[in-house]
Structure formats: structure tokens, C-alpha cells
Picture (cartoon, rainbow, N blue to C red):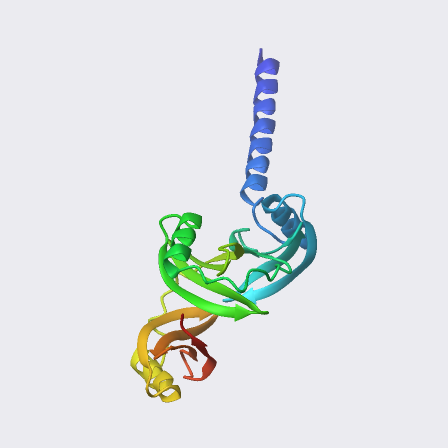
Length: 243
């Protein structure tokens, strides 16, 4: 009887060790610590895609893996946080989109807004801007939903979605960071276009750089100014005809 009890106890201890070991493996399974692990995660997100490039970078003091893939006519870009394998950014764009129907009238902002809100349900529209890229008129739509910030690009003539991306915004407080402030940013923008009227000012992060994005109008013209939130330097200045 004692031998039987001893065998049961030993078997039980072995099961406990196996259970603890499996638990430890499961707990750390999401961590990404190699290019092969990043590749595996990316191909799970975009099955049957071809890996174009995998790179590492430091972002806000944390290691991230940047993975670029392509599948059919789309190029994908994914960013994973190494510490827990969390997908921080995801996006795709159509490679070499056909530049057609450019003689047609642009779709209305209302139509594009409806399309964007159907694509990202229950999101909040931050801005819709008409731009021109490689001879094509496009609408660039910015939205927010929860902790995610979205950017969608549509062919303004056909309404075809050309680019889609989102990123998880930082939850860290920026209260201790010194920025120039909205008033100063508006003043800087106004100097570039003294007779224009400011219609919107937004604080945003552009590739990790804090910026103020300012929209102004003057007659038939629309201005878009991007100002570095810390230095006050004008990073971008665009003047377009507002239709």
C-alpha cells in the first residue's frame, strides 16, 4: 500500500512540474524576441503574404518589430511591441493604383464621411482633407475610436479605398512636456497666411513627433499647416483650392 501511495505522489509531482512548465511557456508565448517570431505573428495577421522586410527600432524606450509584407496588389505594414507581442500599428495601401476618372467631379465630403464611418464603425471624424498625390485627387480622412487613431485615403472621384491604417495612441500623460501651446501655434500659422481664417486646430503625433495641425481658409483657398509642438517650426505648409 505504501509503495502504491509513493508512486501516486511521485506521479502527481511530475504532473505538477509539467503543468507549471506548460504554464510558463504559455505565459511567455506572446513575447516577440526574434525575427522569426515577428514573421510568424505577421503571417498570422496577413495569411499567405510575402515578407518584404523585418526591422527593429526603439520607440518610447521600447523595442518594436516593424514588418513589411505584400499580398496581391497590397503592401502591408505592421508594428509589434517586443515585450508582449502587442500589435501597435497596422496598415495597407494599394500598390500602383490606377489613375483613372480624374475628369469626373469629386465626391462630396458627406459621401466620403459616410464611407469612412462604415469602414470604422462608431468612430469620430477628426478631419477630411482633399489632396493630390501622383496626379490623383484623394480624400484623406482621420478618425479616432477608443485608443486607436485611423487614417483612410479614398480616390475622390470613385470613392475607392486606397489606404487604411491605424495605430494605438500613447496613454502616457503629456502634462509635464512643454509645448508652445495652441495660441502660439495659431500665431505662427497666421503669419504664413495673414488674411486667412483659422477653422481648425488639432494636436497630434506624426511619426512620434508632437505637432499642431492647423486648417485655414481664404476665399477659394484652403491651407494646411503642420507645426512642431515643442519648437514652433513649420514642418509642412500646403495651399490648395477648396472645392
